[in-house]
Image 1 (cartoon, rainbow, N blue to C red):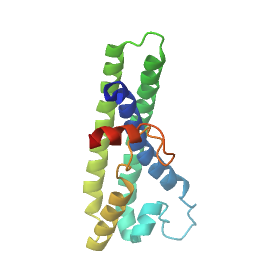
Image 2: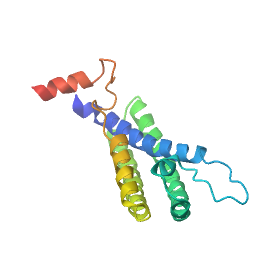
Image 3: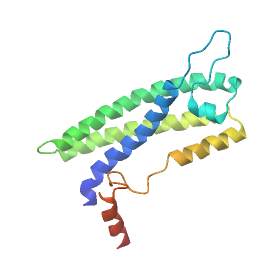
Image 4: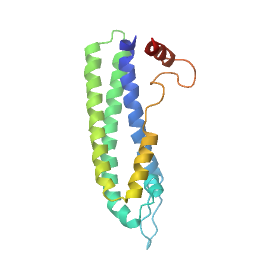
Length: 172
């Protein structure tokens, strides 16, 4: 049963990871206030405001952040397209398992590229943060980036779905 669910689990896992990055980027983009002439640039990113970065730090961080968001945005669009193609392949009357696997590999490769960009961005950005800001950043990431107690598509919180079945299998 788990073998049949594997393609769905991969799709949902990738989707959740992308949703995390996408929501963070969307919030950062939407929260940027309009600058006023004669005032230092506002820190439009909620994450960096919460970290309490100074205007001097922000001047170094912002250009890298904008570049990162643009690059990841393109990759997210590629993953969304490939994910839609996987769903279409699965939904077909006669699913081609090899085509599904190939498309899943494409999704995973693009997801890997996103993860590499995130790591590079975090490594570069942490150089501009104080020790306290770095500690706060990584604590925030730990809290927001964990796997749920139940697997994807588990009907989490509803008492149905695959989670009870998987727990029962794990207990045996």
